[in-house]
Image (cartoon, rainbow, N blue to C red; front, side, top):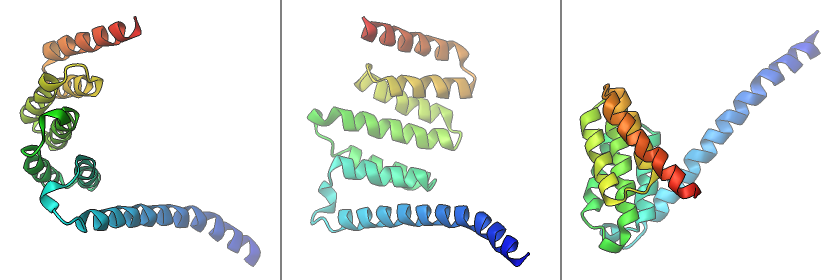
Length: 156
């Protein structure tokens, strides 16, 4: 009887231990990456991929204001030849505002991203989503049509 109890306890505790270990490893890798980024000599001129990595960490931890703040700060330092990073910044800021149900500002940032690079499908998907959430079905259908046209043109 005691053996059955141990087997059942092990079957219950092993998945929990696995999930906890995975989360601890994820946090460890995040902290290790943040430490590496922190050790850069000039924090003002960080690489764009590092900035987006930190912003994604903030998004995963639901620290919307921190994410918006870091992206707004570094957005002013983007060079013209790094347009794709600016679009990613706008999309990430839009996601933050969308997550706290401020749909008008989220749509504003998604539209900025769309104006910079109208061929990126993720921006169009984000716009459709935020318009649907805000109840603007007409704008959502217009953007969805643009997305459909973009998909059809790519397949040709």
